[in-house]
Structures are given as structure tokens and as C-alpha cells.
Image (cartoon, rainbow, N blue to C red; front, side, top):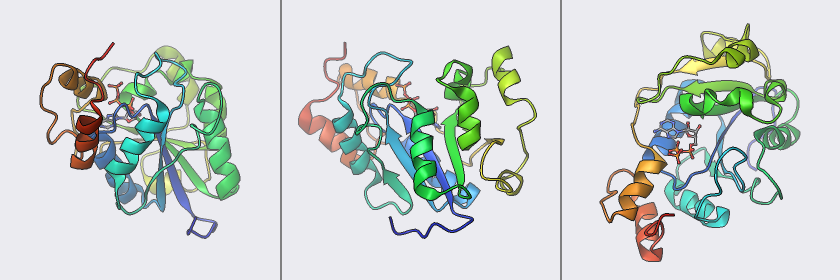
Length: 222
Ligand code: ATP
């Protein structure tokens, strides 16, 4: 895919429902590249999110919106690998496929917002996530809850203070990052505004807004 698989290649996965993608996702991905010196961020829409209700907009359309949102942004990739897989979209399987692609010595990161991190202990094979990748947790303005006990046990001894310490090994660490721009935008709020005919200008990339409007998506939220 254009990047040589060298010993130190640094790649992140940012998974999500992306229902729809918004500027909070995209700005975080760009700032993640800068903060961690990443070669690439794979933004990967879940085909069937395991822990939430099936999204009203099908995965292929959420992927198309993501492609419109990324446009020609360097180092960000709209990745369809979960859409090409049947069944629930487990991140552990997605990371295994990225690991197979980039090799054992690649530095692989699973990036997620603090809200998603809080539920990590309920995910499928949470220990395996750390065998495959480092976890990087992005602070979100409206999400400050403390870690549940089971999550504390899962991450005990893994936390490091900076990217250099994280990338000393290919996987297994935890880094909490406060990126420079924290945006209090959520897809839930975007969907609600669209449902009520409200404006979503400047919450989404223009190309994403145009496509949502042209297709009439999210107008009749269930
Ligand atoms: P919803 O409101 O439908 O739950 P969301 O806005 O949280 O959606 P997701 O697709 O679930 O979006 O999020 C994908 C990933 O991006 C998650 O790890 C989430 O924590 C993170 N994320 C979402 N919005 C932001 C934001 N504004 N800033 C930083 N990270 C975000």
C-alpha cells in the first residue's frame, strides 16, 4: 500500500460506527498522526458493531461518507476490511489482520476515545487486543468518568508516559493522550440534529454534509 514494511512502521487503527463521520473523528485522526509520528491511520467502519444496536445507515454508505470526509487528507485511509468480513466486527480480528499485513515488528496502535475505552473490559477478547497492539486513549471533552474496576485490572502495569516509551515495543502498552483540539462533537448529536431538520454545518466536512442532504440520510431516525 505504498509504505515499505520496515521495522519501525507506525500504524494506527481508529475503528468506530462512523454514523456519520464528523470533524471530531477526523481532527483527532490528524492530530494522532502528529502526536505519535504515525505513517498511517486506518479509519475502519464497523460492519456490525458488537455492543450496540445496528446502525440505521448500512456500512457501505458509512464507508462512502468516510471516504468523502477524508478526501485527500495525507496518511488517513478509509478501510473497508470490517465490511468485507461477515458477522460481528470484533476489533481483535481487525487488529490481527493489520498485524498480518504490516508484520510482527510494526508498531501497531488501536486508538479510541475515553468513552469507548471505559467499556473495553466488555469487548471480545480484551487481553488479545494488547497482544496485537498498543492502546492509545484520546481524551474527549464530555467524558471524564473514572475507570471501572475490571478495566483497571486489565490495564494494570501497561501505562506509559510518552510515545517513545510506547514504541519501544510492537504492542502491549497503554498511553492516554490529550490532543491539542478537543471537540465536543458526537455522532448521536449530529443524527439528532439531522432528524429534527437542524443545521450540522461545521460539525461535519462539507462533502459529508452534501451527501447526507442529497440522499436524505438520517431524516427519519428510528
Ligand atoms: P455515537 O455518538 O453514535 O456513539 P461517536 O461520535 O462516539 O458516535 P463513534 O463512531 O462511536 O462516534 O466513534 C469512533 C471512535 O472515535 C471512538 O473511539 C470514539 O470514542 C472516538 N470519538 C468519537 N467522537 C470523538 C471526538 N469528538 N473526539 C475524539 N474522539 C472521538
